[in-house]
Amino acid sequence: MSRAFFRPVLSLAAITCLFAGAAGAQERYSFDEETLEIVHALSEAGLDSDLAYELTEELTTVIGPRFAGTEQDVRARAWAVNRLTELGFENVRDEEFEMDFWTRGPFGAEEVYITAPFPQPLIATTLGGSAGTPDGGIEAEVVFFASFDDLVAYDDAPDALQGKIVYVNDRMVAAQNASGYSPANRKRTQAWFHAEDRGAVGVLVRSVGTSSNRFPHTGMMSRPEGRRATIPAMALAGPDADQMQRIHERGETITLRMSTQAGWRGRATSGNVIGEIVGSEAPEEIIVIGGHLDTWDNSPGALDDGSGVGITTAAAKLILDSGHRPRRTIRVVLFGAEEVGLLGARAYAQARVEDGTLDNHIIGSESDLGAGPVWRLTSNVAAHAYPFFDAMQVEMQHLGVLRGPNSGSGGPDIIPLQALGMPVARLQQDGMEIFEFHHTPNDTFDKIVPEEMAQNVAAWTMFTWFLADTEMQFREVAEE
Ligand SMILES: [Zn+2]
Image (cartoon, rainbow, N blue to C red; front, side, top):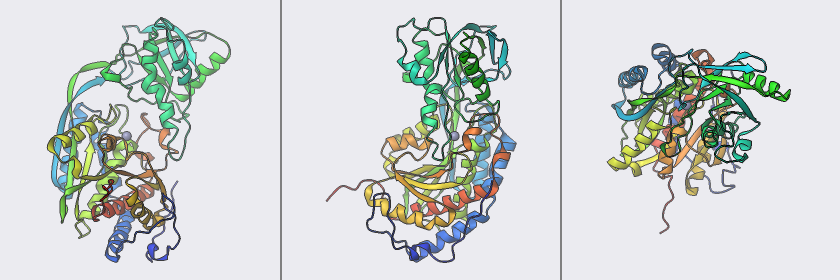
């Protein structure tokens, strides 16, 4: 699927007279002519650029999977440092941090097998943070839960599920704004401790994803207060979950065997790779953009998040090449260890608290929902800045970008900074297809549509310039 994007001849701001923004009708913000000239040239350059596509091709081909803490993570960070340096970014560095290291063990060592009533193998993947099983696996009767909420509401006596394998079946719904992910994801992140606390010996869930192919979706489980699972936890591919459901609907009691060699394996090092365009007038003021460099272990992570690395790096590079230097510093952060719990994002935020530059972070945003078209601009900024964002959207109409609400996050790796008070915004990508591939072996480079990726770069380069070359502040201003 591809689409054409219109290139405006006239400034769209000039022909806009009636526009109700996120907070309803209010005063308008107008960009000056020089700003409009620069951003329109950047948009043209973005639509014509294949740099994001080339960077993502190179990262996914030359490095491949780059699971945090592994040798491939080391190679990915070296690649990123070299690439950012070659492209002309300033202050390029790799800020390393230590982390707990979990692996699934060898591929092919994972198994889910129905032993009764209808013996057959199922396609499954181990979830991040799972414990391993004894040699030969575990075998137990399944307690079937139609939904995560049913599991939570179940008898919470410590032996209520003694010796059983918990299965949770609820489905993820595809949506443009990806709103199906969070509710479906609760069973991946939290079912394990609800099962373990009731005496279960294993937990199995329907994959958090929308693929109807036999690709199971992996992903990290949560670790409340650093707690580690003592039971195995796995996810079934969608069609295999359907198979479980059909057997259950026949009134049968299901018995399963699960085996996995997953486990926590000491400590490891990862890092955040950073490059900058130093601001001309207010270099201490920082606009953070980026993606995450790490992937799951089962794919080269073209959509999650090789494309975010490519899109944001290319967008900043177009600004470097524009002949104009913005007032503020643009900092591209390629976060490490996102998939295993936003560890790079937390380390980055902690480091800024320690070096005293947190309050210099003007606003932040991440590209981390694949390479599909950007469809709306959301913000989470002080009310006085709404008209500024409304005016940004007007300039992005030719790219098909709508104005979204003033709520939500700037992307997963931006969450720790947002929690510390940094304003955020987001160029939301279409979420209908990404969860076909997300966290599966099928997240490969062929899924990227070059024209859609170029639309992202055009939107990102405009967005980044607008935020970096203004004096507008996005935090609440104290009343005088
Ligand atoms: Zn991601």
